[in-house]
Length: 373
Image: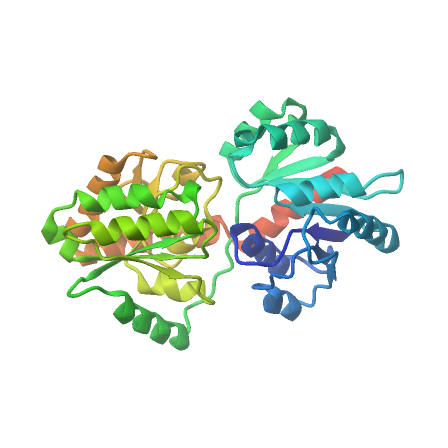
């Protein structure tokens, strides 16, 4: 099968990371993958090039450039793909607009979040185009339920394919860099390093995390350092959080550290991952942290309960509840290091439950069903 993966860019993001994971696990005797994109953000381009996957640039000005659809249409006619598999919402729209005609490839649209209903215009467009997708792939049961409720014509064509992880043992170089980061990020005499991995944006709810830290006993705050790792998509939100932290007394040990090239070093450096999100589908960060033996404190969003075993591999709290999040952080602080390490080891079972090979097998199975093979 010749498959074109359509995505906005190869920037750092959960969808991009999952696409690269899938490409690395595909059986090339069964699938010949290509990529098409329309933004020149190439965080994952070196990995794609190492995998030998052709990349087609449709432009550099974004999806509103009318030439993007025209170039995509020409690419589909020239290369004669069996399947176009889009990642993210706008590429899903473009794929359905470009794949017209009797000889057009099958179109598979991936949805990866439960926020579809937050934009009436986007929801109306999705409903209008629903019948032009041969199938939908979602990464979480929560996303399937959301899509079915909001877009009834999608029912019967939705396939749940959870995220996957490609696991390899930590190298000495990564371990050394993680140790260096830990020393750099620790505040004063703190011995517990909490990490958030994700973009700085409203759905990730950084103010909830600050609300939780504010009420901690001072003895607990003294033991904690908190770092937020990820690109900033909402500069005003970032600034408001920083101003708020600077005005607090006692001031919690919290900082935004931006985007890092190697996310593996982050998981090797931190003692616990915190996910304060208001909504998610299947959060990559939770899966990756547990694969690295790191316990997790997460809000009860999306399919978090499918990944985290509350009280065994981490703690699950209601979203937008600072009291509950504060209580979970306090439990972490009060838990001896040996017990925290055991929680982390228990979470490594996700390496097999959500392997890259399973991700690839489940995805290819959807292709075969759609094509009747």
